[in-house]
Image (tube, rainbow, N blue to C red):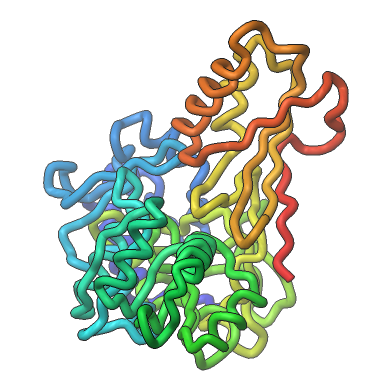
Length: 390
């Protein structure tokens, strides 16, 4: 286990103590190992105490470049540095650079993912198409018309685009010039990755969060994910927050210290589980192996039981519910099974209204399925992830 922190981390602790009210109180000259892990799930409550950032920023809010709102709700910030979230490090290794025209299919609306990749790609000299999410037919047209060479987004949406392009008889190397893709926010099934590589598509994955930016990424040299140069990463016991010894065969929570002075995150618990790659401790992790809490990532968005439970519990005609995440046709599916007696008049309107309210809260549209009262198992969790990644 690394017992001595780097000079960059030591400098960050001093700076945060001086310039951030939150960190001044939390650090209080503690040794690094004794600083409590700041859990991602704590951020909403902390921010509510002093909106919008709970005193974590070291600059006034009006000096930030942008403010975003992620599910939680959690306010996220963009500083004035061009590549604030530092994804250029990963994208450069993945082959993105001058001469590329890149279709960025992450959302530019409220959540920061779209700007994360836009800024990194521009830093590398690539041309960016701010496509955002959805609009499959138009996006396929853009792929062809603009001779797009690179894609960033989720693997499921690329699968959707390529399926549609296939129906239009567009072929790689002819109508489609796409040759590279970078994915995050959603796990890529190994079988699908192999298929795309056989088609001549260079595929890389990265791991980051809306709060911390880039954490780790594929580099094509070693298996697993290389820890980004801009973070200090620990694998910690989720209960105690103590780092697991490097070389130990164990899974723990990914805890990162982001080397950024605008929005310092010190010993930030991402809620994701991972382990050190054997023989590469301190340099590579084994990828995301699960979650610590009750949250799951669906179509690139974190969904927590506490987000949608109040809505359903206040819906008079729903007596019980269970949410199940599955994987169908290379895409995530979020289904809410609702126990209820026969709906009153205008039942379809009630379901549509509930679906819209849930989508507003969790940022994805759930599939609602009515079931008989008493059919759902009471001994199972009310949010279950049944996806398998063979």
